[in-house]
Length: 327
Image 1 (cartoon, one colour):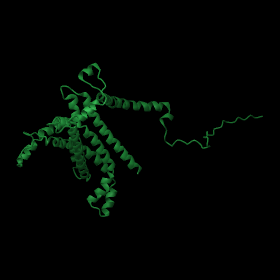
Image 2 (image 1 turned 90 degrees about the horizontal axis):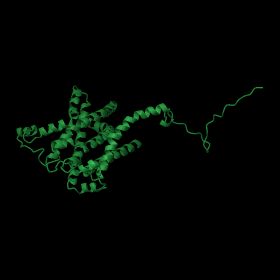
Image 3 (image 1 turned 180 degrees about the horizontal axis):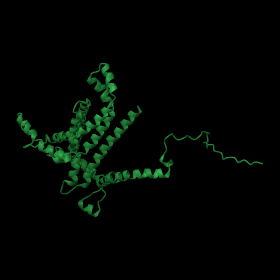
Image 4 (image 1 turned 90 degrees about the vertical axis):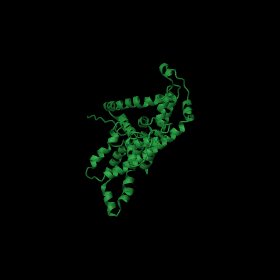
C-alpha cells in the first residue's frame, strides 16, 4: 500500500475581510526587505554624508543657537560658565538702532542683486544660445568673475572705485564728469557693493539658465516661427514659461547666497561709512568680532535671523514646487 504525503498549504494568508495581501510594487523594495549585506552597504554609503552634515552643519547650527541664548564673553568661553539668558540677546538686537538700517540694507542689497543678476544672466543665456562663432570662448570668459576668489574680486573693485586713483573716476574725468566718492560716501557705498556683487553673480545665472535653455526642444521654436511668431513672442510664449523651474531654483540659490554675502562688503567698505552699507551678515561679524568687547550672543542672534530667513524662503519654494507638480 502506497503512502502519499501532502505538501503543506501554500495559500496566502488572507485578512479578516477575505482580501489577499497587496503585493509590493514591482521593482521597489524597502531597506527592511533587502538582504543584510545590502543594508550594511547602504548604511556604509550614508555614513560619510551623515557625518559631514552633523559636523559641519548640525553642530555649528546648534552652537550658534546656544550662543544666542546665553551671555557669552571671552571669560565664559574659557571657563564654560555662560549663564542662560533666553531671548534677551534677540531683544537686544531688535532694540539696537542699527537693526532697522541693517534690515533695510539687507533687503535692498538682496533684492537688487537678485533682479539684475537674473536679468543679465538670462539675457546672456539667450544670446549665447544662438550658437554663433566664438560663443563657447566668450561663455568661458564670462565665467572668470565666478571662478576668481572673492577676496580678489572685492580687492579689484576696491581699486577700480578708489576715489583718487580708481579707473572708474579716471574714466569719468576723461568725459568731463567730476569724481565720485564711491566707497567713502554714504550715498554711494551700498550701490558700490551691489554693483560688485552683481558682477560676481551673473556667471552663475548664465550657466544655470543656459543649461535650462538646452533642454527646450527646438521644434517648439520652429513651429512658432511657422505660425508667424516673432523673436519676442517666442521668448515670452516658449522660453520664459519653460524656464520657470530652472529660474525658481536659480533665484532660490541666489537668494541664500546673497543673504550671507560678507567678504565683498567687508573688504570694500567694512559696512561703512556710518553703517550705510551694513547688512545683517556684516553686522553679525561686527558684534561678535569687530569690537574690543565682543558681543557673541547678539552676533549669533543676528546670524540666526539670516538662517530663519533663508529657511522660510526655502520652504516657500518647496511648497510652490509641490503645488505646481500637483496641478
